Length: 273
Image 1 (cartoon, rainbow, N blue to C red):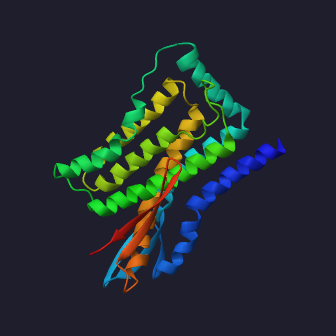
Image 2 (cartoon, helix red, strand yellow):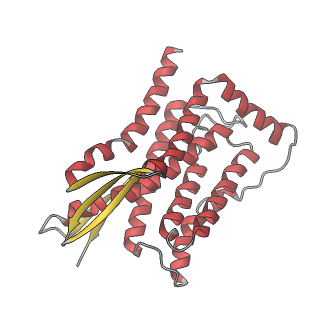
Image 3 (spheres, rainbow, N blue to C red):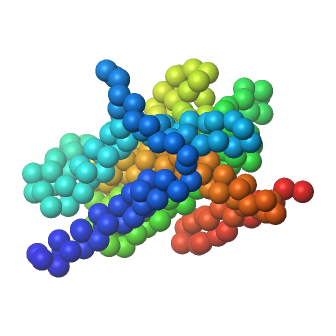
């Protein structure tokens, strides 16, 4: 029991390292930090000056509340028999009591929201970022979630509902789908909220199919959704700072973005000619 709790603690530390350190170390890159409070939200507004222009980056308490709650719920299931019974009840209702064939569309639609960002641009509906910036932001988001998901899978070793493997927690398909949905929302939220609603609808359907196909527990879905959303929001927060860090070097026109996907670590080199 003690050793298992230590493993859960390690899992929690992975999340802290990936999501906490950048916020605590960001002060060296900014000129002013202001605390703004309103009736609707509490946020930290970070401002920096580049080429004579001041640009705000807002880290809203509201923006991280939902993914944080999802992540906490997922971790709680690892040690709560009551929440584990919820997982088993959902499996019984969807799979055991109503056996059915597999519907493998989830392997493909998890990428649909991200693909939509590029499709919309091709058809002339421009998002808030240019092609290079949004691509690097998406790579950064995918790298964060891949490190998170694969690390947690190797530590927790939760058996899948169908007994096929011990890498159920958290859910990679859902992480990818919700990261892509948040990517779509971030790029087009200033144009219409319906883009984000469509993306999140696809992500939710992806998550449901993983349970419908008896490949994951409900808690896997919840944890994966939280990681996916937070990964993309963190990527949008970090990318301008990474870009600014390299642009502050007077003789350097090169920027390196780390990437991680399917167990492979990559470095993406960006050079201005």
